[in-house]
Length: 233
Length: 407
Ligand SMILES: Nc1ncnc2c1ncn2[C@@H]1O[C@H](COP(=O)(O)OP(=O)(O)OP(=O)(O)O)[C@@H](O)[C@H]1O
Ligand SMILES: [Mg+2]
Picture 1 (cartoon, chains in turn red, yellow):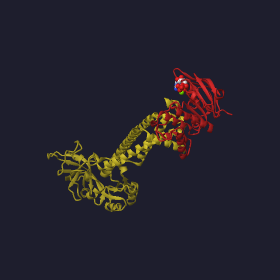
Picture 2 (picture 1 turned 45 degrees about the horizontal axis):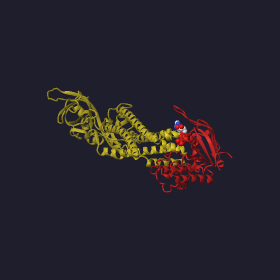
Picture 3 (picture 1 turned 120 degrees about the vertical axis):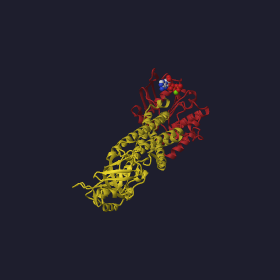
Picture 4 (picture 1 turned 45 degrees about the vertical axis):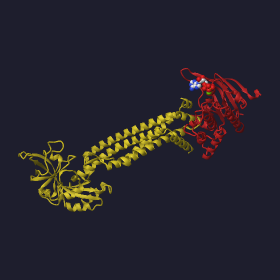
């Protein structure tokens, strides 16, 4: 079966006075429906890799196929469209909500932009917010929400268009263990029920181990080791 | 369609949730710019209109009929009473009058010393009761009173000719007062002495002396004639040209002209005013455009992060840019509305109710507009608003997403 994500010799060097080689040659395949955790020390290049996979940045070198599409062939507008239709992204920073929109509106904006029917997207967004435990915060603006609540709104937003791939950069970093568990269980459920492919960054590989198929360790811009569930069990 | 709905939604939330004082400031500045533009062009147009009205009311009337030129040049219009009666039947004609044009020199012995000062000038014979229905000279009397139909031994002088009003000049009689005796030697040699009955404010320097038509006929030894027939019409009822045509069919041999033909000398003034008005309007539009541009640009730069996030979650660049154009056009529309209301429902009625005189009794500060001028101003503002919304949003929206979000 065709992999959902195919990365080959991906490199990213941040330009600047002292160029920073953040990714130094990553090759990786993620199957459809696979739940993968990325981990590693701070500065290892995890967020940088996820930015490239999520089409938020362009790699310096290497190729990337998502769902069979060579993303290098896409124009800027096509990449935007691709993100809207196929990808969900949860940033490491929780301050990525649109400040002028309520929690509900933040969640349904991508759905609206994708052409959803009004009644439909409001209900869908409300349902997603209930799933992340924010059923009582629908009409709150971002500045009226805690960091963890904002992070969970961002998770709901990433899921609203039923993305083929969900990228989540430390989605549970600002959450208590109970909320974190809720989110991880939601991801696992989405994966098993909808066959969603999930790539998640975590600093706590132990905590996500029960949910994921593979854990990939990054170090200094390279893959250090990969641990698969089968090898574990 | 859906893209527009999304743009509208973003624009709506951005305006309603955005910084209210920023919104108020933006609309305030836009209104001021629009008021500024309307005010200056309105004053200039008003000035021109008043200037023309002044000339019509004091010198030219709307339509002037003069004697036959071809095949032979005639000195007078014959049967003037009959012609005036015919012209008066044309619908829209308000009043007609005839005038005799004479030339001569006026002499005045100010100190009763036998030393006469003489000045030559135009002497006009009028039918006072008819004339005042066409011209407003009676409204600008400085001293004494206007002529009446049988005042054969009295004259009314212009202040410029009388002297003693404003700056003295070699072309004045050195200070004639009401009641003084002035001698006129007409071009045909007739010499008569008159009592000055009144002096009018000769603001536009026409240096004319009025006698009655009755007296003019006695000087010229003619009757039932005229050098000019002057017609005042209702210009909103028909065009000037159509009045002229009707008059020409009544008097095919005579020469018929309208005031625009006669105002040749101040047409250059109009051109100058128009150029000034165009330049000033262009400057105020440019200032307004730059203002809108800077305000909205700064606003969009403040929203860089928001724009980056929207792009990251897959909102099309076009939707984002359109959202900014909508916002910008909204501010522009508010500015136009408030500015327009301020000028047309406050400033202009106020100036009409409480005129500010430029020349007392003659020329007031008025705001006059042509639909075309106002339309062009509005269009220019809308174009500026569109560009001011579009360009900065476009620049930000095509930035790298991560740079837009994290700087
Ligand atoms: N915009 C940038 N410009 C220059 N260097 C950058 C930029 N972003 C990241 N880096 C550098 O690239 C390297 C990898 O950064 P990255 O954010 O991917 O780390 P990370 O693994 O996500 O770390 P953390 O766990 O702290 O989030 C770091 O050395 C970082 O300093
Ligand atoms: Mg990171």
